[in-house]
Image 1 (tube, rainbow, N blue to C red):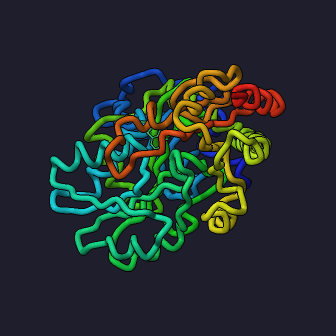
Image 2: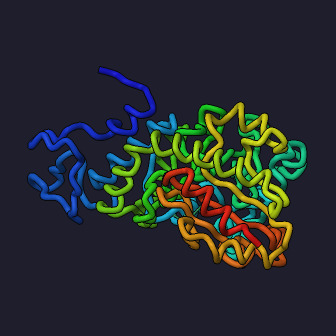
Length: 381
Ligand SMILES: *Cc1c(COP(=O)(O)O)cnc(C)c1O
C-alpha cells in the first residue's frame, strides 16, 4: 500500500514493524557494531554505527519523506548538521549569502569558524530578493535562508530565492526549524537542502538535541553521507528514537501551536504596554502574503516589543508563571526569553543585533486561556 498524507508519513515512513518480532515501534538499536556472517558478510549493509544504525536510518527515512526530499541525514545537533553541510559544499575561497538575522549559532559558525578556513560571507536582508541577487558572486556556493527568522519573524520568498540561487549555479539552503515540514516544505518550492535543529519542533518535547539535513538531489545526498561518516557527528540511537517518537505527533502539535499563538497575538496587539507584535499571521506583517502562500499556518513563535523599553521587557520575562524563562523553542511547554540578553547576546554590535525592548515567545500547547492570562498579568505595569 502506498500513502502520502503528512500525518501518515510522520507515523509510518521508515518505520515498518520489526521483521523478526513484529515490534510496532522501531527498536533502539543500542549497538556500535554488527556481527558479520563471514568476512564482509554484512547483514543489510550494517557494519559500524557511525556509518549506519537502524534506529537512525528510520529517522532519516522519515525526515526525507516529510520534507519531500530524496535523502535525510541525522546529526548530533543542528550545528553538527550545518558544519557537515558547509564542509561538504564549500572550500576555501568560496562565498556564502546569509540572512541579516540568521540564527545566532549559524552566524557564529560562519563568521568565527569558517571565516578562518577561507569562506567569505555577506549578511543580506533576505526579504529583499533583489538585494540577494546583487550580493551573489561567481564564488557564491549557497544562499542560506531562514524563514520565518529568529527572533524577528521575517519572511523570505523561498521560490524567488531558489531562482536567484540557481541562475548563478548556487544552492539554496533553507533552515526550516521554525516552520517544521508540517507548515512549510522548502524542497517543493525549489530549495536544494533543508536544515533542521530537530531539538525544536520535530523533537517537540525539549528532551533531546539533534539536527538533520534533507536534500533534493541523490548525488549531494551521497556526498553528505560520505562527510557525515567521515566527520562522525551522528545522532545516537536513543536520540534518534526520541526524535522519531516526537515526530509522530508533529501535525497535531503544530495545529495547536498555531491556534494558541493566534490567541496570544490577539491579546498582545491591543495591549497598551505592547508597542508592536511580530507575527507573520498578522495582515500588516510585511511578509504576510508570502508566508500565507508558502506556509500552511504561521507557527508558534511570536515576538513583541514593549513601550516601556528594555526594563519593561525584562520585567515581563521575570513575571510569567506558565511561560518558563528559558532559551530554545518548539516544545510542548511555553517559553519566554529576552533575545538581547539571552539567545542573541553575542550579536550585540554586529549586523545581527536585536532591539533590547524585544521579547520572544515559543507558544506551547497548554490551555490557551492560561497562556493569555499569564501574559496579561505579567504585562501589568
Ligand atoms: C536551535 C537552532 C539551530 C541549532 O540547532 P542545535 O540543535 O541547537 O544545534 C539552528 N537553526 C535554528 C533556526 C535554531 O533555532
